[in-house]
Every structure is written in structure tokens, then in C-alpha cells.
Image (cartoon, rainbow, N blue to C red; front, side, top):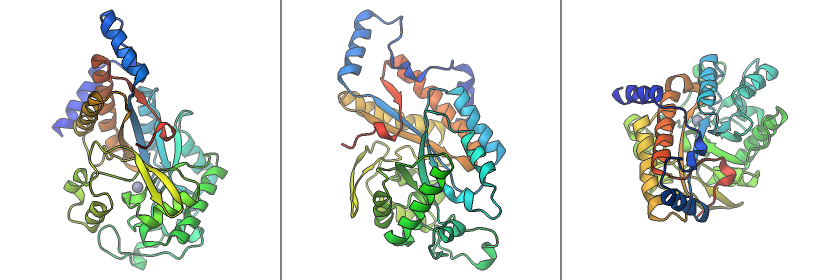
Length: 338
Ligand SMILES: [Zn+2]
């Protein structure tokens, strides 16, 4: 809580810095400014990905307002939205209202990617027989839990690549039909992007997979559950400084973009800034290369956690300006695998 309050205090005191901060400050000595410019033109940058996982559970006004506020405070920060088609498959869903609620928090420069959780109604709408477990928590869902919709905690890696292709295709088509375009990037529900998931998304035209996560960040909340162990196996060796790499699948290569700063429900503003600092240190060792930092939050808990992201953004931008670090807010298409 102390960290959170500190983040908020900083946010109030810091001026809103443009993320194109990247340019050297006017008061700098000319030689320092020139050398920073040289570095920036001949070399890499710190590339910041700010991601939002849309869980497919609900679209509440308090969460959407928190996202509108984030955009208003940081208009130069692009968001990478991993959108979910499950909102359109809820019982009695009003497609026009759903579309309008989602669209209201997506800015023109933002990216529209894809997120999938194991929702029963989404899988059935895609023509796939629903599986009720084992869930992230080691349980199996009973009929009493599925009166309206259920399955958020069922890992989609339980399904075959052929089954998943149907769900990916349904989701991309549904989002496209509602004006959100065809996703090129993906994050898996619960970060559970095992082989069948990676093959399915690649076969359906997705290029960027963004589920690799350092499980150390998740341990305080998830360690008692099977999910934590599964993620430790899938993403073994992933750390806060892991960088994009080529991930082969049976359907072709993906660019795997590590979610190296995880998501705000699991990390504080202080931890996000620490991830930035660790990656900044890597960039300083070799300025010719881009270094990617990924932080983010969930749409469904934005009202509770987005202040952590805002606190981190304010401090990251302040550090970049003060230390003349070339920082850019990017979407997935700017990412290159090493
Ligand atoms: Zn999710």
C-alpha cells in the first residue's frame, strides 16, 4: 500500500511529459545533446508496450472510465488491447452496445489484438465442445457454476490446435465484424500459450504472441495453484529482461514478445519501474539494440489497478527525460525478434 501511495503522490507532482520525451532537453549542454541524438539515430531505443487484457467477463463503467482517464493523462502512450470476443456471446448481449462500450476506450493509435479465455459460451458459439477442467485452481466446474457463462479459469491449452483454430477464427471474425479489425497479436488467458495455442493462432494469421511471463511476479498470488506450476514449465527462464524472440510452431514462426513486466494486478508501480531500470541497464550496455519493456493491466480490474500503471508511466517518462534515454511507446508491429 505504501508503494501505491508513493506512486499516486508522484503522479500528482510530476508534470505530464510527452512520451516523445525522447528528444534531449533544451537546457542540456550541446555536446551531450548531440551525443544522445547520435545514439538515438544510430542505435536502439527502449520500446514501451502498455498492454490491456480484456477478460471477456464484463464491461463496467468504472473500469472503462479508468481507461479513459489513462488515455487523457498520457495521450502519447499507445495501448495494446488484447480484445475478447466473449462479450458478444454472453446471454442477451446487445452487440451494438457492446461494440460502443469497447470502442470508447480504444484510441486511434492503439492496437487491437486478441485475448481468449475458456468461456463456455464462446467455445460453443465457435462450434467446440466445452471442457470444464482442470482449471487454473485445480478444480472442475460444475453445472451450478455454469448457469449463465463460465470457463474463464479453464486453460484453453486443454483443446487441440484444430479446436482452437475455430475459436480464434470466430473471435477474429466477430471482432472484425464489429469494427475492431483483424488481430495480429495475441495474449493467452492465464498466459497459458502452450504448443496447441501457438500453432492455432499462427495458422489463423496472428504474428505476435505475448504470453511469456516471469512467474516470479505471479508467485505471491498464484504459487499455491496448478497455474503457477504450469506457467513455470511453459515459460522457464523468462525474466524481467527477456526480449522478443522467434518462436517456431507447426504452422510457422511467431514473434514471442515477453510480458516481462507482467500485469498490474500482480506488480506494483515500484516493480514496474524496477523492470524498466533493469532493461535500461541492458540498453546502456548495448545502445545499438532496441530493448522492449512490457507492462499492463486488465480491463476488468482497471478501476482498482490502473493507478499503478499511471504511477509507473510518470516515473519512467521522468527518468527517460532526465537521463536522455530514447524511449518510445509502441505497438506490436514495431517489435523485432532477436
Ligand atoms: Zn486474461
